[in-house]
Length: 407
Image 1 (cartoon, rainbow, N blue to C red):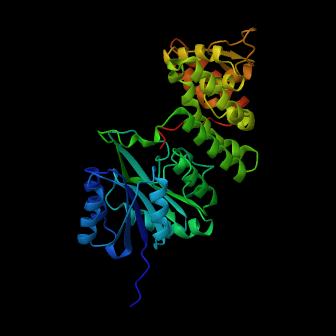
Image 2: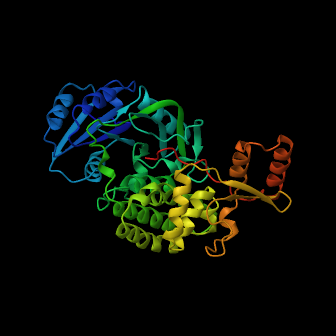
C-alpha cells in the first residue's frame, strides 16, 4: 500500500530536555492538523536525563508517525537538525526545539498559509515564556513578502515552516562548524532563495521558553563566537546580494543585532586585552561591509558607536557608551533653516575627535520621534520643523524600528 506523503515533518533535536520535553511533545500531539499529515523526527543528541526514553514512550502512543534517532552528543543543535532533515519526507519541515512548544493550530495554519500563497517560508507569531521574543515583524499577517520589504530579517531563528523542496534543491543544511548563529545563516539563505515568504501574525504559533536551569543558553558562548557568527552572516549576504541598497538593508541586521552589543555596556566591563581583541576582530568586518548606506539605517547613537569602531577609537567610544547607558538625553540642533536635525551625542563638532557631522544627522523618523519628546518645544515650532525635515529628506532611508530580542 502506498503511504501518502506527509504535509509537514516536525524535526526535534533534543539534548537534556526534561522536563520541558513533556510539554513540547504534548503541544505536537494537540495539533489540529490531521495526524496522518504529520511526521515527527526526534533526534536525542546523547542525553543522560531520560530524554531518549521519553521520546520512545511518546513514539509508542502518538497518533502520528514518530521516528526516534539516538546518537552520541554532537555538541550543538546543527547536527541533530541535519540528521532529521536527511530523514524528512514531508512537503514542509518545521524545526521545533525540545524545550519550546507549538501554539494551538500552529501547523494547520502555517501549512494552509504556504499552500494558499505558494510561499516557501512561513513565519508564525512567536511569544516568549520567561524569555524575550522578537516583536517587530508581527504587526500584521502577510500573505506574501520578502526579506527586503519587511522586518523578517530580525527573526533568523530556525523555528519556521520551510518548503522542503527549496532546501533540497539548494542542498541547504545547518553549518555544523558554527557554535552560534548557525540558524541565522540557514534562515537568511532560505529567505533569499525563497519564492515568497508568508507571516502569520494574528495567531501565536510558537512559544519560546526560557529554562530555569539556563541550559537553553547554549548559544551565548564567548564574544569571539559572536564575531564568527557576524562574519559568516555578512559573508553570506555579500555573496548572495550585489552591492547596493538591498545589501545595505540586510547588513543592518548583523551590525545592529550581533556586532553592536559587543560595543555596548558590556564593553565598559571588559578588560583592556578583551577591548583590544574586539577592535581587532571588528576591523576586517568594518573595512569590508560598513558604509553610508548601512550607517544611515541606524539610530544616531548606534551609528556613532560603530563609526568609532570603524575608526578604531576605543577612547572616544567609552564616552558614548557611558552617555547612552546613563540614559542622558541628547540635545537637538536644527540647522539649514530647520531642514537638518543633529543629535548632540559626545564629541559632536570636537576638533580633536574629528567626527563628521553626518554621523550625528538624524533621519526623518528618528528626528520626529526625538523632537516629539523634547520638553519645552513649542508645538507650532515643532510642527514647522518636522514639515521641513520631511520635505528636505524625502529620499533618506528610514532607519528600521529595530529588533526586539532577535532570535
